[in-house]
Image (cartoon, rainbow, N blue to C red):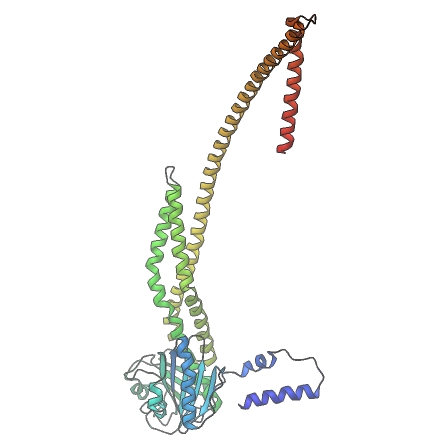
Length: 447
């Protein structure tokens, strides 16, 4: 493509003219990002048709092949494989394609003059067979027409009856935009053909302004719908939120009762925490995206620079009045789920602390009981040791007595009973010293 050739040439030129450090790998890509998704330069008058489609991952892959087929059909260079936007002019219409994170959009433009703004939309210029094979589900379908005031007999701002006929007699919403260079009208309804409608009356629009204006109007429509995707989820989650809130109140109230089953309450809290976290993880992205899309709607409305037309609401007033309550509901549900998650976490922590204290008390009682039992065993062991020392002394003295008897039989003049009696204290002292040494060895070994 032309901009890629220009990019390569710029890199070579910069490297040739000045000996500066090498470029960051993303320098030129990031620099040229401000020129991405530029609004089309349109001739006036113009009719536009817009489609925003929700696609799966597989459908996004097929989308590029479908675009390539259209380009080959008209002999136009197709988009690159990594491109996320593309514009081209075909025989009788102009097309812009953009691929976003959650949707893809197609804008079709036609320039032949007609008297009725919406009788022959730009989409009729697109090959029917190619259009029928576009993948995805329609999120937004809109027709827009930029006409002069004379084309639709629009002479006086106080008389909007000539415009109402183009919207099936529905109440109109509109304003002057772009510094008074144009007036925009719509009814924000889907008509019998399945498309909503925007009528732009050209007072003093330039071609670049017309492209930007239509881009902003279509952005407002698709971002408004994308923001509202979270609203049905919020309404669906509200009963579950109330149920979780009541369940948490019941659990925390039971925690204050002296005869409650802490283990059972902890199981209930764990189950409630899992349920709440599952809701948060499942829907947090949708609520965060809704907030981001709502901000984009506000930015696009500010870019219109609306000036009130007496007797009707501006686009900003109409959208804000209906979109803001829905967004506040989504924000409230998301915030309340975050709060209840924190409350469940606090209750779980309190209950675990209570259970830990009870377990610690039980452990202290068990340790005290074990210490008393060990103390009793020590006393018994000391008693047994004392008895054992007496028994050992008795047998040792008896053994010495036997030896003395044997020596007396051999002719030694020994008083056997005296020797046996005198040996008893010495034997007892020796046994006591030996026992203490054994205790000392055991103590050193355990340390």
